[in-house]
Length: 362
Image (cartoon, rainbow, N blue to C red):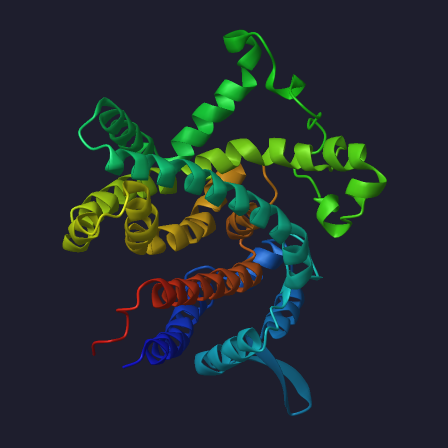
């Protein structure tokens, strides 16, 4: 089997996975113990309001019996077909509780850039701290630096995100007492802007026409970085420890391989061996860890965004689930599942490109 045929098979397998995952979402939101209509209208509304919302949700339908309007339940299989058809055609519907009659696309368009911004810095922190530390520890085994980096990575990885978020939030709130300066006094003021709108992305010419506003304005680059940095540090901490430990192990296994000994016997310098042979092969086991960071962003951002009051998709999902906005929960679940599958496909593509052995065996 060729590498690209292997990759095509992996892409094809994502289709039944998507259908199964969305079927589980349907069972939770529709066949579960929670009544979505009652969550929307509240306990004090009358039967007329209940039936009107149920018809709009596709749970009931109107029928005429002897000239009288009656409401009958839509069969569960028909609800399932309608649910899957709407999602697969990207008709994500509307929010009914948090933002009544507001389309999911509008809510995602507002919140998604903030979550992407958070994810960008979370991945960046993990990549530029975890991988270099792991490679350094692997190239210098059984030294004091190796022991220190390994111990620090294990301790950092063992700290839960929610606990680390609360501790960091308390430290930032008391920096004046602890360190003699206030976190809010460093850089631009973000007391009003809790989640910058990232206007510098929408209008890149701001850096030319008004560089001061682009960097230091209330919605400027530095304000956006300052707001997102604590949450990004917490969110990237888990992957940072994993990358360091697996990177160290991968370097040790690679550097003791037979082809590395052959390269040394041919007279290659250590620099050439490290850069041309060790690093590339050591990156192969790191591919699922790096792409897996995005999976952590999906689940971890829900908790971290809530703790830091960061108004992204994670906080929106948490609020929708807490308030019983099940149509919004179902639409966001579809987006998260689709994003996870896309990242799995990207992971397989990276495997196909980096490792030429992929796909050679059945």
